[in-house]
Image 1: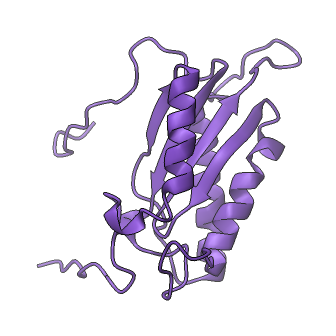
Image 2: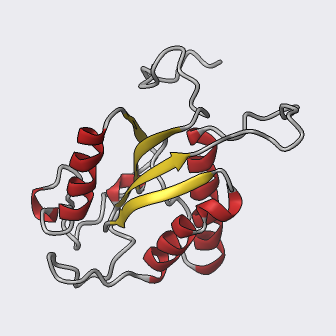
Length: 181
């Protein structure tokens, strides 16, 4: 491992099995918080009009249970530069009761990785967007009904609170290009 890389503290709960049945709240942000999921004229709380990338992000999110049959989805929203959603891992038992040989499957990380890869592949084949996502994602294990209610309300209210959101970036903002000197 390179010593030049910055240290990133893990947000994972030590010793927790992230493939165990539970409810998980996730937030996935775009690279440099670029507003690629909605049209340039997006201004909440009007109805969200997704860009082609936003439509794919939404479609692929809804298809997660197709690829991971032990998963259910709860509330989610595709915002201009991020996705909020609740993923439920119901049961991660393999039909043959044999663990996979090389990869850790069934974890919340594997599910998010698969989603991000799918959207990225589509973007690279159909748009000029090459880097879709920021590294990693935020996840929270939902521990009780009170948290679930609060998180659902947060997701529901996110569009009308967009200009106050910590992930808010003006629709006309474009990050400065990096120059190699």
